[in-house]
Figure 1 (cartoon, rainbow, N blue to C red):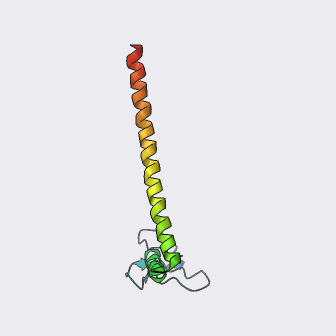
Figure 2: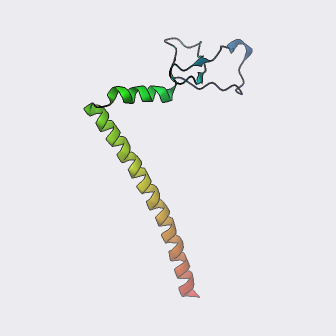
Figure 3: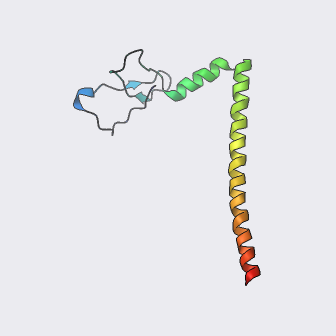
Length: 101
């Protein structure tokens, strides 16, 4: 998988391959020259955009988008529930403290 090029990362002197620009956005990618197989020429974000564009309008793409939307909504609701439960516990403790005093 493509990794973004980090100029601050320490590299051994023998692995000073030049970074490769992404074909779509131009972001510099670290060249994994020691790995076998085809080289990554597109960053992960652009790969995702290409996949979304390819599957747009298909039943599979619509199902995937709907699932993604529902998962995000579920996470927001679960986060809100956890926050509200903490608030409920704090208020309950304060009420108990007031009743006991």
